[in-house]
Amino acid sequence: MNRHAPTLEDVAREAGVSRATVSRVVNGVRNVDPAIQDQVRVAIERTGYAPNRAARSLVTRRTGTVALVVSGAGDGTGDTSEEEQNAFAARVFADPFFGRVVGGVVGFLRPRSTHPVLMFAESPEARQEVLRYLRQGNADGALVVSTHPDDPLPALLAEAGLPAVLFARPVRPVALSHVDLAHWDGGRLAAERLLARGCRKVATVSGPWAVAASQERLAGFRDTMARGGHPYVPVAEGGFTLDSGVAAMAELLAEHPDVEGVFAANDLMAQGVCQVLRERGRRVPDDVAVVGFDDSSVAATCRPPLTSVRQPVEDMAAAMARLLDEHVRGLRTEPASVLFEPELVVRESA
Image (tube, rainbow, N blue to C red; front, side, top):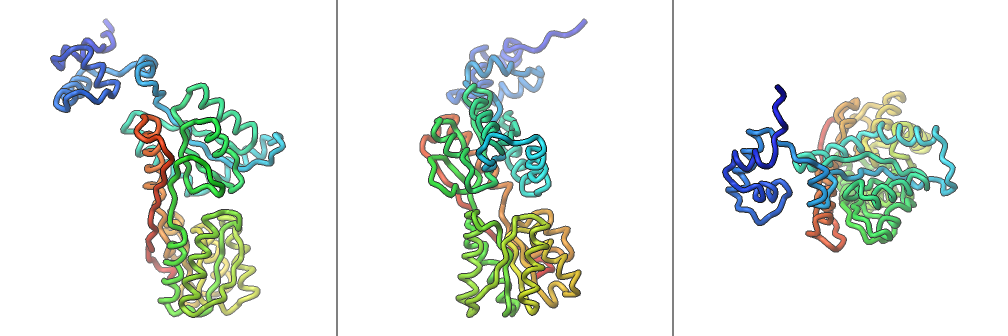
């Protein structure tokens, strides 16, 4: 004979409390004595009770899901082909940065029985789909990772009054909470490392010019080099990809073959820098010291392992999820920002 699914009454009987008390604990009502909460949780474990998500959402007004949105600028025409959509998704999944964001988000949400729903918003149609999804109450809010400074989604979310938190400060002011890194200080740390190694002829591979983080990392690097007596730092623009790092380093070597130190604005580009130097017979770090940025998995697997400015992406993503949770629960009503500090992780490349 099949045993019936455990009910609130079963949990109440096991815990020695009323059904109403069990209901308050299950639904996160805070005016329950902590000792009684512990009794109820033990009873839930013993009985194997699983709350009915649909019924619980009627009480808590929570869905138990949040939208994790990776957003781009799109072309504004409304005509994004399936091939372009697939290419956008492929670029996202190829970047170790995104995996670290997911890890941080899931690490915060899972203990709270909340789960992320991955959505892409690389076109006007996709952005409208995200807005519809949130307006219809399918998720409690959105965690947004923008890949382009002209991304219109943050402003659309703010105008719609939908709960959302951004990874990185938006280029244009928008009334949404965000988490970010002190990127200028990251550039400073990279410059100080190369100066400490005695590098006199230094160059840098920046991220895309339009991205605020790229500008700040470059400014921190150049300012610190200037203070160290090196006012001119050649720069080549990259796109935060391995191939763009290869192309940028080839360009720099063609114009500055005697370079002694290179700062690349992320680890994928730094890996491309090391690849070009190796192909040209330049030893890292004996001939050219290289510093990357992010301290991603690439830093440990690169040849040689990269000295890199650490961006605590997992902690930043968890903070983003925490801010959204506070907004959804009404604990925070005004936009907030959380700024993380970078640190230098020294390995063999510099």
